[in-house]
Image (tube, rainbow, N blue to C red):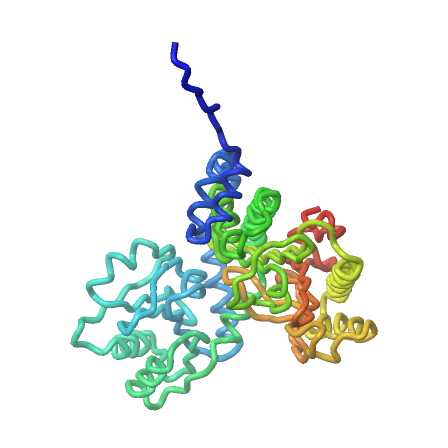
Amino acid sequence: MSTARHKPSFSPSRRDLLSLAIAAPLLSSTAILRAAEPDLSALSDITGATRPIDATERAARLARAQSLMKAAGIGAVLIEPGSSMIYFTGVRWHTSERLTLAILPVEGEPCIVTPFFEEPSVRETLAVPAEVRVWQEDENPLAVVSAFLRDRKLAARPIGLEAEVRYFAYAGLQRVLPDARIVSADPVVRACRMIKTPAEIALMQAATEVTLAAYRWTKPRVEKGMTGPEIGALMNAATKKLGGAPEFALALTGEASAYPHGSREIHRVADGQVVLMDCGCTVQGYQSDISRTWVHGAATADQRKTWDQVARGQQIAFAAAKIGAPAGSVDDAVRRHYETLGYGPGYKLPGLSHRTGHGIGMDGHEPVNLVRGETIRLAAGMCFSDEPGIYMPGRYGVRIEDCFHMTDAGPKWFSEPPKSIDAPLG
């Protein structure tokens, strides 16, 4: 019989593995994710019931755009690849020196202008009846655009350019149509996209539910010593498992939370320090945006006071968001209140250095903003973030962010704000 002593086997827990990964300075977020994989495997897609934007919805968008074009006297609108092209045509493409453009005429079907060799790929996502005109490598794509406008007898009417159209396309259009009056397409494109339909709001709600579920999974796994990128990696991994496409997962710890978009310095989670997360995802092309702030360990009285002040500011903004009110008045209401607490004045620090909120939809930031001086009036279907943070440079910051959409009866939350710093997820 051997007298050798056998060491007991050791099966590390998830917490043990996470701690080992955090302690090893050369290990990346990959190690954190490997340690969390058993927990991640328990998550599943919660977006199965969502419905993508259909042909009927896209037809209504074109009809709405054409009605607005008639009212504004615009003959056609030109759009480069991006969310507006997806919105009107379904075409998911990229910008390059080779122009691909969507042309929305005031009457009739749209036209897609694209390089000859890209046509098959462009057609893969084209979701509306449309003409496709191509140009060869030795041809001028704006000449193809000009030909379409002349064929439709639109060349003599004002031509609207969507805000993202690049200058070289604008200049090229002027060369081929020197007598054309080129105007902003904002009265058409923005007016359509600012007002979300029930189908769009349903997708934004689905994205919100994914982000909330990912937060609920991630927060208990935030541990002392973790960096912001490591926490963000956990959040993104959970988001993917839940059926969302991650857009951003910002995690700011300690002093970094005092700067709305963070710091280049490496900060690690420590007892008594603020953790501020700002995260969002996309579901079927529509986004969420939620921020949560808590303290790792026990919060101080000062941290609690600031958190409560931000929570109150968020509710003041929500109450000020009334149908017909100028968007800027929402920001004004919050800033007036903060100034009574000694913050500011205006955008000065310590206080609220950024706008109270931004529009949201297919893009994380869309017109119109809840910012001082914005005169566009709130209307049913508009969607906004509500995030009146308070930031104290050199110390910490607090941001609580939830999005809402306007209804005929007033604002309605996509996600309910948390009740306390001790229960930041509700």
